[in-house]
Amino acid sequence: MLLELLGLAALFFGLFFCAVGVIGVIRMPDSLTRLHASGKVATLGLFGLLLGAALLMPSIWLRLLVLGLFVLLTSPVATHAIAASVHRRREIVEELAESDAQAESTDLTAVTATAVLSRSRIQDIIDAQERALRHHTPDAKTKRDT
Amino acid sequence: MTDNSIVQAAIQLILLALVSLLIPASYRVIVGPSLPDRLQAVDLITTLLIGIIVMLALVEGTENFVDMAIALAAFAFIGTISIARYISEGRVF
Image 1 (cartoon, rainbow over the protein chains, first blue to last red):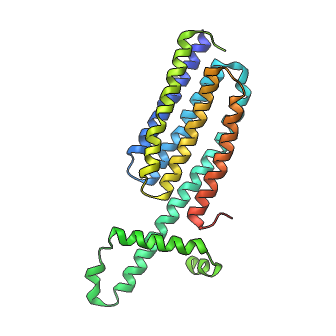
Image 2 (image 1 turned 120 degrees about the horizontal axis):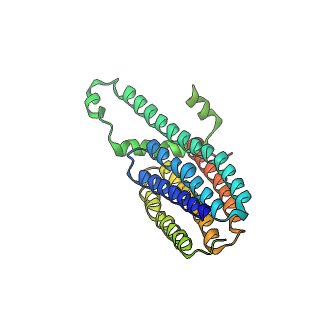
Image 3 (image 1 turned 135 degrees about the vertical axis):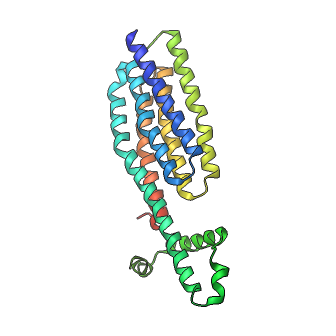
């Protein structure tokens, strides 16, 4: 009886953190803050559910432990890869805006026109850059890194 | 395996709540402004699915469902890593 009560408490704990994480993914304003919210689902939410399942059904505790360890190993790596891709994308946008502003500032009449880089223009630049990245010649990569 | 009907009802309620959490998560997949946002939302959905499979094993009383959850976790990890690498590097390998 006590075991079932503890198991149900752990299950509701996990469900609460799953709901919090999903609400955070909907409501947060930024990619990285959304990543922070979805990390809560992978650790606290899922581990609450696994602990509750192990308490309610003790015959499968070893498999649940293996699953928990696996998620504990892989989830931070996946989150880190996504965060790195977000960061790399931002770097591309900043580089391109900077180089664009430098190129335009050489002739003085065009400065005011391009001082505000419009959102659609930035999106066009990102698309062109992604098309270039897709082909990925080693020559272009060394130029980008220097 | 529990035979208490109140516990069974609570487990089914939690399973229902977890399944309904998939709807707002897929909202982020559809409207996510950029590619990493969608990838992250898909990752969140697979995490929720692992929880759903574990709850399903509790409801049905079937032990083998947990193996399915382990396999799903492994494949989701590989997929997320390769797509994230494709976004940031422009190639997978």
